[in-house]
Image (cartoon, rainbow, N blue to C red; front, side, top):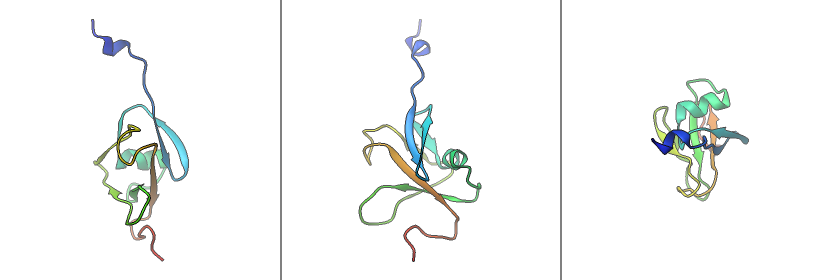
Length: 90
């Protein structure tokens, strides 16, 4: 017998546009983040990493590891935005 089938489902926490969400897998893609945020498909996702520099853009098919010990450590945070606006632009 495989123990994997008997493990309880594990949820990973993330924050999208300042709202907390639970996700059933340890990875999430940019497209899935947009669905959680109810953002249009043509919008852009950025991961908020803190510190100097730009927050990296997450592509639709690009997976992001949601485990707490994966850099940046802690709950992963994301924003969605219109494609013609740059994060931190004036």
